[in-house]
Amino acid sequence: MALVFFLVLLFSSIISPKVHACSQTERSSLLASFTHTLSSPPFNWSSSINCCHWNGISCNQDGWVTHLILASKGIKGGFKLASLANLTHLTHINLSHNSLYGSLVQTELFLSLKSLEVLDLSHNLLSGKLPSSLPSSNILTVDLSSNHLHGAIPPTFFHGAWHLTSFNASNNAFSGSIPSSICLQHSSPLIRHLDVSSNNFNGIILPGLGDCSKLQVFRAHHNNITGLLPEDIYNATELEEIALHFNSLYGAISDRIVNLTNLAILDLSFNQLSGVLPFQLGKLSKLSHVILDFNNLRGSLPPSLMNCTNLIEVRLGANNLGGDISTLNFSTLSRLSKLDLFWNNFIGNLPTSLYSCRSLQAIRLSVNNLQGQIYPEILSLKSLSFLSLGEIKLTNLAGAIKILMRCKTLRTLCLSGSFISGANLDDNSMG
Ligand SMILES: *[C@@H]1O[C@H](CO)[C@@H](O)[C@H](O)[C@H]1NC(C)=O
Ligand SMILES: *[C@@H]1O[C@H](CO)[C@@H](O)[C@H](O)[C@H]1NC(C)=O
Ligand SMILES: *[C@@H]1O[C@H](CO)[C@@H](O)[C@H](O)[C@H]1NC(C)=O
Ligand SMILES: *[C@@H]1O[C@H](CO)[C@@H](O)[C@H](O)[C@H]1NC(C)=O
Ligand SMILES: *[C@@H]1O[C@H](CO)[C@@H](O)[C@H](O)[C@H]1NC(C)=O
Ligand SMILES: *[C@@H]1O[C@H](CO)[C@@H](O)[C@H](O)[C@H]1NC(C)=O
Ligand SMILES: *[C@@H]1O[C@H](CO)[C@@H](O)[C@H](O)[C@H]1NC(C)=O
Ligand SMILES: *[C@@H]1O[C@H](CO)[C@@H](O)[C@H](O)[C@H]1NC(C)=O
Ligand SMILES: *[C@@H]1O[C@H](CO)[C@@H](O)[C@H](O)[C@H]1NC(C)=O
Image (cartoon, rainbow, N blue to C red; front, side):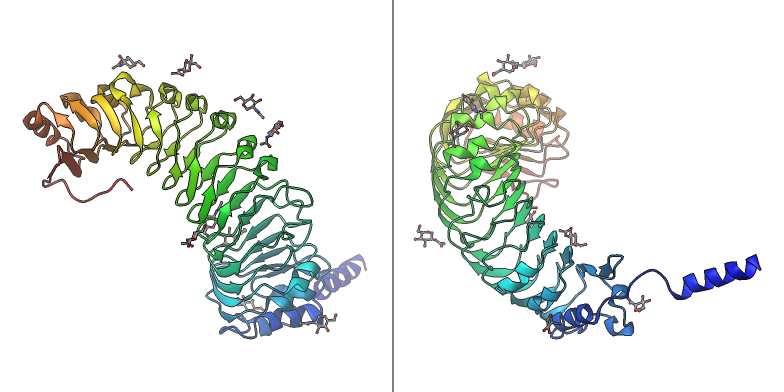
């Protein structure tokens, strides 16, 4: 008797599993979104009436669709984002790396997706302007990078997106001001990653970033931004990366930069910055990349820089820097891989302390007023592949060539204005 009862229980639990099927509305919303894509509807979506079992779809226990994950599925064609508006329980949308086109302007869509946390539409062919605001107060991550979106970021765009931690708009055609007020009232004070690089943003960087107390990565390189570095950026003390290369910024780097004690990557190359390097720059002990080439910086290298033992790359070429670099002792920089001081006014003897930087792969000191000698100890740089000493007065040119020919790793060598090439020397660049 007990056995029969048990079997009945077992059987009924098999035929009526406690998972609810998705509703007709949810099913038709999903199908409607993709009716114009080439693989429409994607995959075998029509194979089951319960859309919770479809490829790329997950539901919660009550049968509401929560996840739409179809990244890198080769989906091509017009995408009706607006049709997703009825999927009000969606928390994750990831359609990145497809060939979807269409527009995001349907504001009502974003307003109805109240539970959305992750929206990744990156690497598609989406065009048009941004809607006036982001989906919801639950939104955490928005990646719209590598599309054809344009226009200004609406002033209200981040309103109510309290929990947003990551916003990526890079590689589009956005214009207007960069969204530096993102952390101000009604907006997203918790932002950690803000990437608006490779767009057509212009104008100055308006104050506001100083209120981003969690900001770690700030990228706005490859735009048309002008003006000074905003004074309040030095208040965003969690910053680990500032990447503003290829813009038209001018003015000096403030001494207040030493407040950014977490800074590892500082790339301000290809701007019109002037002034001297902050004397206490070396207080930034986490610095790994100091990339300031192609500016109008003057003055000498702050000796404190030799305290930055995590430095991997130092590029200061094409500035008006000067001073006697033989007085600096580079031997503390054991991780230094690239040193580029080319086209400045440095004077003095070639610094032999560089021979102690065992990670060095590329050294460019050409076009300076340096002089001196190459010593056999340079052969202790076991990874050296690029050495450019053009226009430097070498006192032992023949001896230098003899020594350097014994350097098996060297692929590019430039001495005193004449390029030397050999069996193991071929093209390579500082880049
Ligand atoms: C969404 O829901 C509304 C009414 O709730 C309905 O009129 C509309 O057809 C639905 N859209 C889709 C794509 O199912
Ligand atoms: C097609 O759908 C069935 C069930 O509906 C599923 O078992 C199968 O894995 C799906 N095929 C693909 C390629 O996703
Ligand atoms: C979206 O999916 C791709 C591919 O799986 C993944 O690399 C990416 O991190 C996902 N995006 C988000 C925001 O999780
Ligand atoms: C933003 O997206 C671009 C391209 O998809 C990517 O290379 C970059 O690393 C992303 N930025 C951040 C901060 O993750
Ligand atoms: C950059 O902005 C200036 C005005 O500030 C404008 O004259 C110029 O055409 C812009 N350059 C590009 C490449 O958009
Ligand atoms: C930076 O922060 C300090 C202290 O919180 C504040 O007094 C100052 O006004 C801020 N500077 C800017 C430019 O916002
Ligand atoms: C920033 O540094 C200055 C001195 O350079 C100091 O007076 C100020 O208190 C620092 N501000 C913060 C927020 O650490
Ligand atoms: C390097 O750091 C040490 C200890 O923090 C300090 O005493 C020294 O003055 C610093 N060197 C330079 C050149 O700033
Ligand atoms: C550089 O400093 C190291 C110790 O850190 C010392 O051994 C070496 O002699 C110094 N080299 C020069 C050229 O001053």
